[in-house]
Each structure stands twice: as C-alpha cells, then as structure tokens.
Length: 325
Image 1 (cartoon, rainbow, N blue to C red):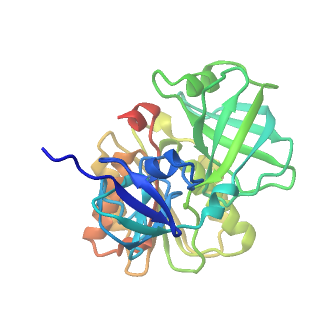
Image 2 (cartoon, rainbow, N blue to C red; image 1 turned 180 degrees about the vertical axis):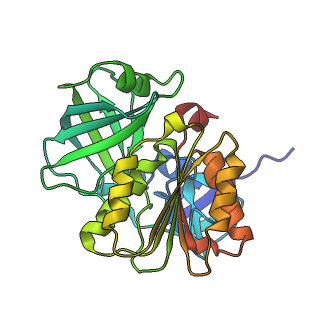
C-alpha cells in the first residue's frame, strides 16, 4: 500500500508538517508553534482559529462551542485531510501567565464541593466566566483546571469551587486535607465563556460546580450595571447538593431586571434539559456549564427549539479520566 504523504499546514503563513491522524494543534505544538490552547478536548475554544483553505475532519461537533462562527475550527479537534491554511491570533498564547499565592480560605459547600480562596502574590487579569489551572507545591506535577467563582477583586484574591472526583488527586486533597497557608500556582486565564454585552434575555444552566462561572458572570454584571433578564437553572441530583442558595437569592433581590431562579433536583438529566427548553425565548442567549453530557444535551435541546448555535455559549467540565479517553 502506498504510504500517505505528509500534509502541510500553513499557520499565519508559516508552513509545518502534519502527520497522518494528527490534529492541527498536535502538529503545531510538535513544530514548536506557540499555538493558544488549554483543554485539548474541544471544550474551552482557546485553540479557535479560522480555516482559510483546505479540508479537515472534525473529531467532535463544535458548532455550538464555537457559537456558529463561519469558517472557525478548533485546532485540537481538527485533523487535516489535505494541505490547509489557518489564521490564528498567536498573541493569545502569551496572555496567560502564572501567579503564585497561598490558600487563605477553605469552606465545604456540599459533601463533595469545597470552596478555595487564594490570595495571589500579584494581580491576574481575567474575565468573569473564564478558568485557570491550579497546581500545589504539596502535589508536584499535578495541574487541574477550575473556573473562577468571582469577578476580579481589588485585593487580588480569587475563589474556586472544587468538586471531588473519584481518584482525582488534586480534587481529593482540596476536599479532604487542610490547605490553609499552602502555596499554590494559578496559571491563566483561559476559555471563551463570559457574558456577552447586550440586554437580551440570558438563560443560564449550571450543573454541580458549573455554578462557579455562572455566579462570577452574574456578580460582574451586577457590578457593571449591565443586567439582562435572567433565568437561572441549577441542576443537582439531590437537595443535599444545592449550595449558594442565599447568594443566588440575594443576587435576584438586587437584580434590576427580571430574575427567575429554578433549582432542578433530579437524578434524570432530561429534567434539567427539558426545563432549559421550556425557558427559551427567541432572542435568548444561553450559557451552559457543567458535566459534558448535561451541556451537550441542553445545547441540542435548545437548538431543536430554534435557538441559533451562535447564541449558545458553553463550558464543559471534564474530569482527568474523560480528558484521557
């Protein structure tokens, strides 16, 4: 059999080789290109680029993650089928930086979610809704991604909600070991998940610790006095999994526009997805955050109800096991 010839990818005009079955991102990183990326599984959109020519095979359906942007692809999910040319803002790769800090607060929110407050040594600029990678001096070689649970603060303190994952080294330590005073590094920001400008109705759907970036966006909007009508659906498996209820009600009381909050307690994912479809209006912008199955099902339901992909913004929380699969 004839061996397939290596393909060529032109990244902003710079040519690199692409091996068979290799994604565009894998090829770029192998060639030493500082291509912006984070999750590598098509969830965060950090590696978004514009396909100028050629053909790619997409490993996953990224339509709603990309917001329906014509011509855009995710480099981590795109395997070139021919020579290709793409355009990407490489400066995004240099916007992330690592800032040290120490744990100044550790609070149990539920039986498997802990709130960590970290006092940074320096200011880290980010948008409410984005995420960062955490690593602890006590756990060398382990780095995990978590969303900021608050907007930027003047005192350079950041907050994360960490759900314990079975077998997860960092998440187990955060939920079970005393961490006050421990040194931690925060590397970020990353992600394309934030509240878009405008006053169109916002449908926000969160599952589990996916409430963190949603709360950050709501807090930021209230501070900025940019408050669209909001419907917040918070899906959990049992009443004991609910948290931040007083804070949500306080946000609702302070919100100038209509604010509807509905906790959805059910072991059936379809209950939350059905509620999302029922809360839809024609000019809605949807923000989905939580487990991949929930996010994907909700996005499919919303599109089936007529909501355009470019009005759906999502952040899929994947475990390390899911990242490796």
